[in-house]
Length: 263
Image 1 (tube, rainbow, N blue to C red):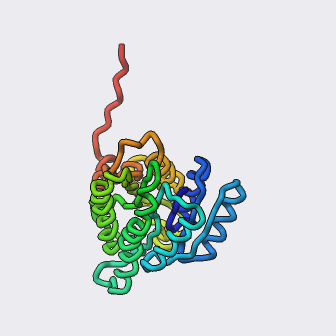
Image 2 (spheres, rainbow, N blue to C red; image 1 turned 90 degrees about the horizontal axis):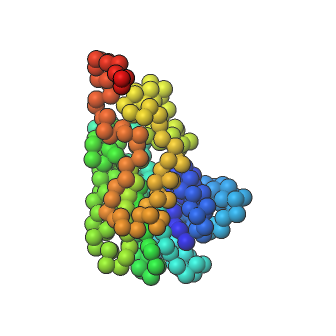
Image 3 (cartoon, rainbow, N blue to C red; image 1 turned 60 degrees about the vertical axis):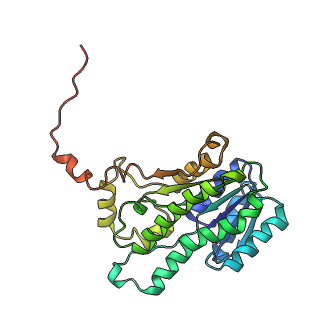
């Protein structure tokens, strides 16, 4: 069975749909009962077994209660996906301490809280796996998202540390680092300016924003049997954006040579 934080919408819901096809029972956690209800309806229409637990991932007592519900209902936990996130664009000089705490609390504290609370159940599973959601700007720069960039960098460090510490229990800990992904939430919070969208797209070698399904496929791989010897890895899913960071604008000016055909 799989527990997904932030599982009612966006990346979390796409991941839940993907894991449901693999046969997982699901527990979805979110602060929003409305998001949970809508996500659960969509999953149950496809025949998935779903338990929803409203949870503020920033509050450790609530996270412990969430894991207790998982133990009570299912008696086991095989997969934890730490997907809950918060973000908004603001210059650092205008970022308030409350804004900083809100994002770091969800992203970094929440990832630690859920992992720590789930540890006793995970260690009893035959092939336990944790997948954390990071971001490629965790090792680049995130202008306008200093709070999220710092938190995601912490998630990367936590991922690698837990991978080493918990390997003795058979718990694999990996991360997926999405690049620009378009969902209803990110369109509202981040990608609400067409000029910005066009500029970001120009910086992606594959020439498009990612979809929630792209990230869900990466998570599905990392929790599956084909990744059984992979731990401590950060799988980037960004269309090559971090590789082309700062150089894509140069490509139109490079001399073009027609490919020579073999004789």
